Image (cartoon, rainbow, N blue to C red):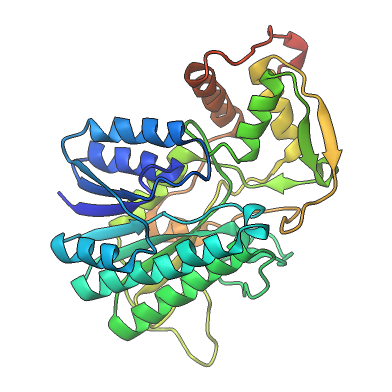
Length: 349
């Protein structure tokens, strides 16, 4: 039985990961600041489910609270830490930059210090596919240079990778960064496209389709994300003895440090995602086509071979299956949402 600190435990991924760790017999200490970035009911309902488990303990605490984080680490002994707490969202970073600095930079160094001073066995932290920024070579590989972020959110995630590597090098702290690709599924974030589309379609409102629908995303189902995280937790990285400073590889190091993509490695056209959603809802969407938004990229596509080689796992949930599960959850969680009658002409084969 491991004792694992999960930050962002009331969040989408943190909730699902905590459930999985508890189900396999681990003890989970959950941490979240419960901010108002989105609907508090959703966060509290996730948290209430976790609190029913006897091996779950929760602390409401902000990562930027240096003394609070230091005190938590000093009085608890963690076998591993999974840092999922962060200010998320590309578009929100355009209008609230200081929030990202406080949570994603100040907060992350507090986590690193806690892990260093208490000699945590393994720190796993959330990065993002957004770090690939202006890269155009597909699929995105952890061995590619990522020095051209297109949003402050992406820049903070790239900074997290650099900060973690520094601690791995200086203090031999095993750290693993996971670049998540467009995570979706039940209990998902309300600011994500699938959630926004579902809410609007059921309410009879138009959906905003950016870049005139010419977008591709490597949509990754939440169960696949969690499976990848759990397998990574159990395999702390070791130094790459073949690493050469003459030809540095961004994806590996002479320090105990690794990066992995976790994506479905099958990009889906945005318009096809909408077709699948229309089929599941039985309602045709009203589409409001818009230009590309600042900070966005036209396509994401994960190369997951390093993940496969390391933990023998490759995400595989088809978009049709994942969207149907999300819609089933949405209709259960929001029973008052307006629902149309199934039009069999909308069924995607």
